[in-house]
Length: 202
Figure 1 (cartoon, one colour):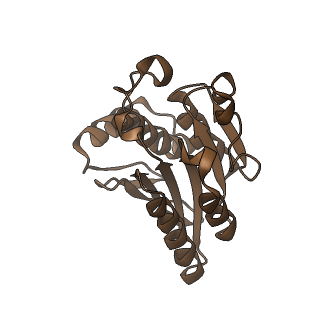
Figure 2: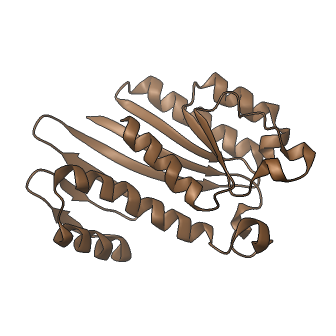
Figure 3: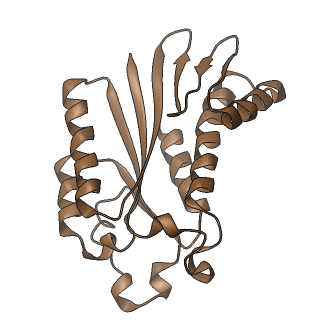
């Protein structure tokens, strides 16, 4: 069975999102962003099956309870606390996973990338798509750049603030030229745009 894995990786100080310098980063918390990403991902696959208000209602209730099952004629979903569900279509079935990881440690981001790489080596049916807000690491970390290149990660780089309107040292990141794309200055919406980009590319 094919597995589609979406990773949302956040770097240092983003655990303070919603409280830290709201004039620059907004008042939306990381938890709220993650919830919106869950909804966006699930609704994408529901829309492929059927445009139904009833299904949408069931989805919203499921996300609140974190452990509900619901079904459509052509697509079956099993939603768990880890936000993983199985899609069953007429021609194929596949597993969809959404993983969130925020860390203030550079090595944890790199280790996550390495683990995903070895998972793909073990199972060719695994496809990984990354959304990365490296925060300050984007301006300093050659090691993170090398890790992304080394594991051949497909990723979109996201920054909440417009880095080109800030201090000169923030205008360049070590990831921007190897990213599929860079989204900055759109606040929390940048994450949703990045996820929709990957969903459209499937």
